[in-house]
Image (cartoon, rainbow, N blue to C red):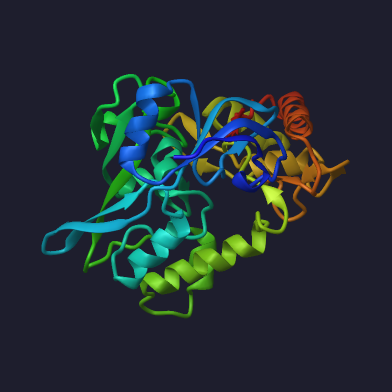
Length: 333
């Protein structure tokens, strides 16, 4: 276990923000991790770096979690329990599951990041969320160094939310996640409009077909972090009450919407941002992506503070125009 000093974190975050870690260490085993937390409590975790915006140098010890491995635990007639270590790349894990004909994660193809952070955000796309296949996870409590199992009911999953973003934030390090997937009789979800359109000529789409559809849709709309720095969706899609929605619909008859309940409607944040005039606009080294207004980008040399300032400008403009508050999905560090 080798602690390095003054290391740039540019390659460790998908936004490509160049800030320094005063101290940095890569952890490759549970034994190393337990030894580390026995001596260090003030740490900052980095996995795939896909859901964060770094705005200043990191004073804490930066820990890059590089735990690898995939294990098939138990199988039943139609289901299988698969455990992936926290450092496994999320998309690679999804591809592996599909190669084994394990169903449930295909709609979540090409989401950046690692397995360990997927439950924190309850990542989701195209009608599916982590909570739909999540079984349990193992985590190390930083204060005690003890391992704890979090069952589904312990995680308090919500829209892009979990107990790890609020009640126990910063108290645990997720080391592995177990998913309950289907071996046969796959309950696929292709109701999302874009997927349905791509697959319209395939009578019985396979898991691979669905994954390929999702990949093609994402690639057509979202920039590749390897080519242009970004963290995917920067804002959550706001859920508003029905009365506010009716007022907005009177002024904007074409406003897209998705019913959440009899009293709540979800409105696409990207639409609100686009209607506010930000789509495709560049502000120095940062800006809003030309194909997807929900994505803020780093054109090469943007600072985290510049991106955050743009985000706040977008929030205020949308609030003034639509009376709808936008909540940032990305973690601001």
